[in-house]
Each structure stands twice: as structure tokens, then as C-alpha cells.
Amino acid sequence: MNIGILTLRISLPGCASLKEKRQRMRGMHQRYGRNPTVAVCESADRDSLETSEWTFVAVGQTVPEVESLCSEIEDRVQRTVDGRVMEATREIL
Image (cartoon, rainbow, N blue to C red; front, side, top):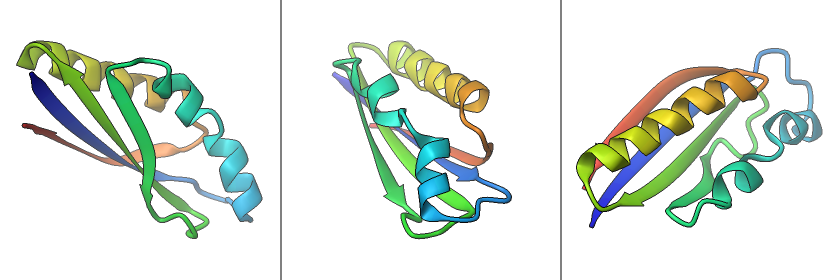
């Protein structure tokens, strides 16, 4: 069993309220939490208006499987979130 931890720091320029932030980040749990091999949470910057940090934990049988899943998540977040990924860090355990 291999575990990958992907942390994404997302910039939300022009975000004026926490309500707007939640609307822009809406659906992260639903999109990624459906997969039984992925856990997701907002891990930092909960009260910050212009940044958000999300951590994804992916589990797989092989390291390439986990890396592929992390890459897929990162690519999909970049395409679907109304913001810009400023930093992405990965760790394979």
C-alpha cells in the first residue's frame, strides 16, 4: 500500500468575502471525496480571503498509481477552480 499527500496552495485574487471564497472553492469535497482512494480537506488559510490550501491523500497499490492519481487531481483543480495554483507539493509514503 502506498500513500501520496498532495498539498495545493491556491490564490483567489479579488476575493472579497469568505462567502465568495466558499463559492469559488465549492465542490472540492464532492468532486474528489467520491473516489474511495482519495481523502480531501481544506488544510490551511480557512479565514484568509485570497488564499486557500487543500490537502489530498491518495492511496494505491503502486507508487506510479498514486503519482498518476495526484497528477490527475492537480490538473483537474487547475482547470476547474476559479483561482490559480501557486504551489503544489507531493510526498509519497
